[in-house]
Length: 338
Image (cartoon, rainbow, N blue to C red):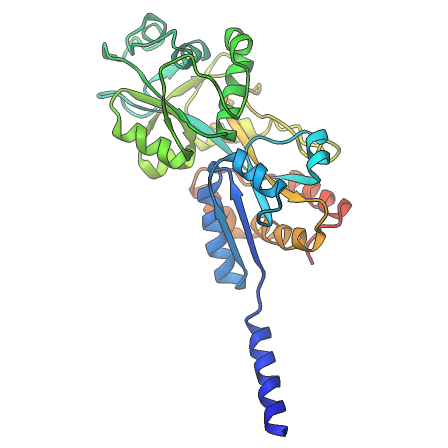
């Protein structure tokens, strides 16, 4: 009996030693690269497991609303009324940028310039050729082909689409009137749809004369070229981390609004016009699970290796003031990690 008791105790100690948090999320593909890197580092450092899969912001919202998994990822923040209706909480996780990647023979990275009129024209179908006067007039030093433009877009409900069309809605009156900002769009142009940021990036890489909107990390991983864009200030901003950082300073997050904000087309010299925050959605009626999720993100906000991983992929770690606000929010809703 004594031997059996000792074996039982040893088994309990072993199982306790290997006990770990396990959380699962799904949704936006915009932050997928950084969440995957964070999960690997977190497991290595803590033994806690985080699984995150893509599928788009729409999937992230619907999954967590149905309580499928522990958290959802969305690049389109939900407003207070919708959060209350779905019994959800929300906070930003990281800031990234959406770039217009292109595949035009002979045109180098950042060499192509596009203003909002040209971008709106391409995706509405008003501009169908690369040498159209609206593009040629701002690219006098580039030889543009007399070739059909192939716009590549997201096929599913997507926060990346929402942030891209938010930029167009703020920057172009015709676009705002005819299309607006949404996670799904009835495009005027003849488009090539692809599911998720990774497949959009691969489609652009494989398709001559194509252009599409993707999160910057996918430009890096697929070694794509991306356009220099006209800013709200009227100057030109290359898709660089320095210019993304300038755009990130324009956030207007608040606890009362559950951090709802759209960063696109903010003012400021060289402020890249399609910056976006990506958000985490949590059930408001499961504090214990919520604390496991916030434990992971608190680690990501503070850990030097996690910050470096985000920066290496072109994401911007949240500034300290925003992190402090998020922690205050967690305390308010009793999901501050143990």
